[in-house]
Image (cartoon, rainbow over all chains, first blue to last red; front, side, top):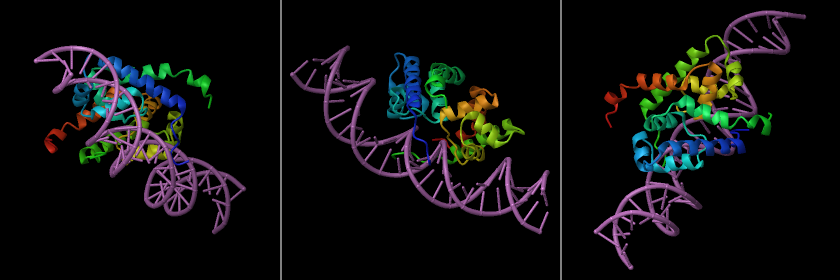
Length: 91
Length: 91
DNA sequence: TCTTATACCGGTATTAGTATCACAGGCATG
DNA sequence: CATGCCTGTGATACTAATACCGGTATAAGA
């Protein structure tokens, strides 16, 4: 109605998204990357753990810049990983 | 404190972002592009008019896909347009 | 052992994104 | 002229993102 709750596959996509970011972070600490991106460490943690499955665009953009990765490949990786959505959720 | 309100330049960036999207939409109607992106037309309108200055990442990704534009260039255009932020908001 | 640093987790507070409803203007068709 | 359709808009409702705090666990080092 007012604001469609996140679907299960959206949350799963968020988890994949977070895993991707964590992998990209590598050895660097959360606080360092968060500071580089200009966000709080808690937010970064929530995104990485999938507890914030749909972060804001500019948050992701700053994060990608801090991690030195492309937004397109990031979105593409999630879209590619979520292509089974078409089977699980035909609508 | 708990959720930093959007700064004025963030809102301005949102306006530029929306203007960019509206320009990219061209002659196509809001409802068509919104349907192609899988979001509601009202949401697209709010994003375009800058009333939703920091949309969700996947919303923007779907929109960019529907419009056939790159996320990196989109983010880059906004970042480039907002470089006067450093002067307006030194903090 | 004690301290420190990092990360995870739960709760809380506040703002913002997203969707539905109702409305107005333009334009065509009856 | 009336009616319906389409586009864009304003108001409203509800959920999610962001941030801060305290606590916990693990590992490294003094």
